[in-house]
Length: 443
Image (cartoon, rainbow, N blue to C red; front, side, top):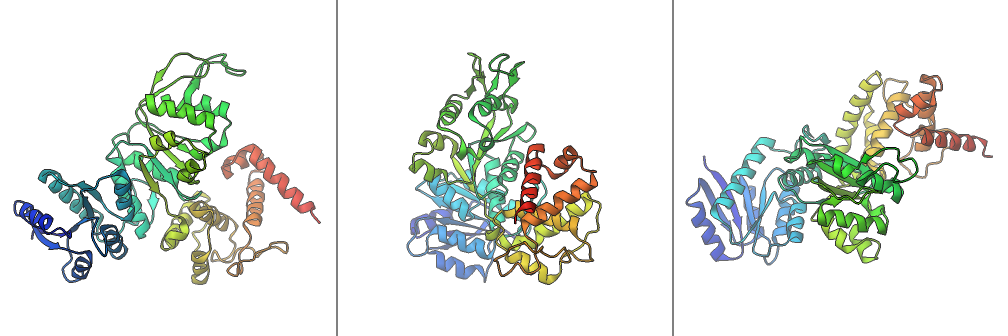
């Protein structure tokens, strides 16, 4: 049977033109002059795809897209409008649109978009995928399904992208997914945390340096922009760089060249640039803290990552994945949480997002002694918890102390090995040990 296409537009002429276009294509077509009528009809006769205008009286196209994907994230919706702008396209994609077509449209472009997005919906099935194995991203919530669609779309273009979201929400994972989804997938993916380095070191890391450029520069070094080749360079926490570095990065974006420190030779670069920030760059621009010209160079498209609180339906799935991961890694039994404990975990705020949840599950796996993961050591006497949900939970600071002690014991006190296992630097481990000792000496 031919595919059923819904077309929504308050312009009667546009509807007639679309019906005429569909007569030359292998589709059945239903037209609606308002979004409400379309939504009412979906339950009775489920379409394969919906095309909607964005500017309509009453419920507009943005609201229609959001309503459809709130109830059925797998149903593809294409935004069609005569008022094309990057901002409108991004907003439509955020609401869940799978594509954006400008009026007047060419019939081959229209058919290609319909065919491609129907095929994609059929390949992904009737619900959001549990895990995007190609991307390493886990989640089946409507919020994550929107992220998958955006990543697929961004993989097919080659523009600069800013990934926004709270710390620990998976911004680097999303950047890697965009890289994997595109035609640069076989080229390098290079990531750097811009917020953790001073200007002099960051400039050297990004642009490279020549021998003798500064004390300790004993040989020439290729910068990360050049090392990325035709791949992708990911600048994390871009909002934390100084005004001076912003100016230098703007030149890179404008001219696609870098100048190594200590050199007068310009080096052409070819990498795609993806940035991320847990700060609102637009607000920083308004406050004069971030260059507006650099912002617009970087922010062709924004990919907003949801916090874990915005995708609580994914928490059980993430917990299951982390239990399997860390039980295997540490060669420990794959224990489970009780239903009561799982419910508590799903209601906790998780201010650190997926990263905090992941670290917590690893600690539970390592410290568990009973048959279930809720049988972890009880809170110590000095542990304070104001959240009514804490119950039998141990504080994160105490869990970290216990985890460090356990790892140190397993490596016979070797701090270098312990730091490697913990995924932190030797300096950070020393600082945490020092903090622990100071806490133990506190009255």
